[in-house]
Length: 169
Image (cartoon, rainbow, N blue to C red):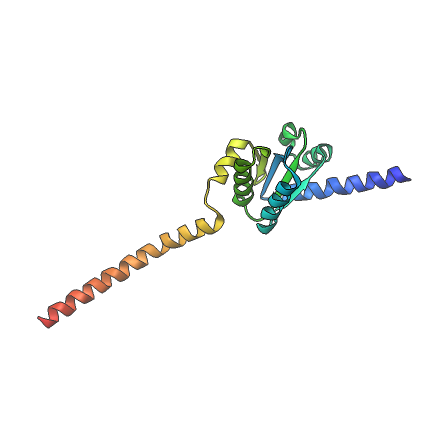
């Protein structure tokens, strides 16, 4: 009876992992070997503040979940201690946080990831980490959209000022 219960629990874990892999816009697999408890706690805190779920998982469970989601390319990277960060909304934040943390702590190494349903390597994750954050991109877009209106307003003001000086003379 205990085996049936354990098997059911494992099937539920695999099902939950499969759902997370499907729903996640960005999933990053990392090796955390060598990090102490304080460092892991600090990393978890940064990820949680950004709305990113971070979990240490058994490779065998993740392999079963990747088989369910047709992401078996990720299996090659599931060796040794594995921690996975799942982000539903933001693609850039998990890459940025984990990459910055790995720069400061040599013990954390990014193995691979899944971005918008496609398995990507470390180089692509680092390229993603170099992108501005979502807020940064939105502010850039806003300034680009405001520039024509601002320039038009300045031109109208310059014409009005010129007409005023012409009328006074």
